[in-house]
Length: 299
Image 1 (cartoon, rainbow, N blue to C red):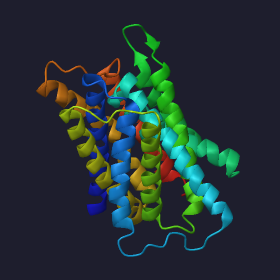
Image 2 (image 1 turned 90 degrees about the vertical axis):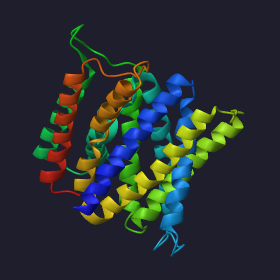
Image 3 (image 1 turned 120 degrees about the vertical axis):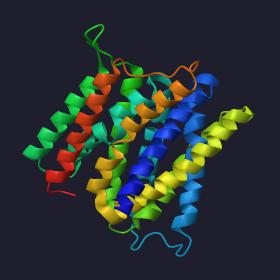
Image 4 (image 1 turned 120 degrees about the horizontal axis):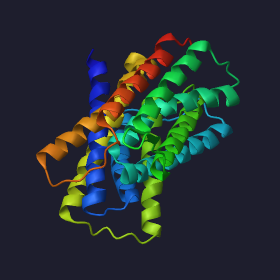
């Protein structure tokens, strides 16, 4: 029960990070890559400090291909992180997370497993994926115009989900030789480091307003704690249950966004076309993830 609560808190912290980042990007015109890079790097430092506090070794059994897989894991994560924050800037944290957080990603994991790992598609996987697609379709549907809204921001979060799924597929093999918490720590650290390097090479000014620095530091600390709680959940309650609980990031983002709007009436955040349909779609998508994890015999 404790670790279940930790994963739920992890989802809440990530939702807060993304809504706060949306505020920084919309109110203070902060570049999405700044909000993606600095907090991720800070979170990575926090997690590295925890993961390597006693044992500094990384690979239990090293092979040359492991280095390439680790690089692939990190690059996939960098693409996913950047596209996620750029999508948040375009379509808002709530819609981006309802579309992408462990929902479409779950479908891509199944598809990549089919093509790359030669795993057979089970009937449950097909049913679960269809349920997720129904939920995602509800999130993008605009009842006023009777049409689906699917622009650049929506495409970005879907591609981000594909990148995260690729990272998961690569990590699946690495975890046979690498400690889970250490892998998450190293990945987060280097993902943030690469984005930070990009900021430095492009001459990005770090002279942000005090409010922006406050958001950056706060979200960075929260990211580190969220990463740690997520890693503990994977280790103690398993990937299946952790994945289902973490899928609540989208619902939490929607609720937090509404709370921010209620607390600051002049604030303008981006929400999905229909809050009712989006909430329903989010719940349906989470149910699809539950089906995939609960009744699927694969890990």
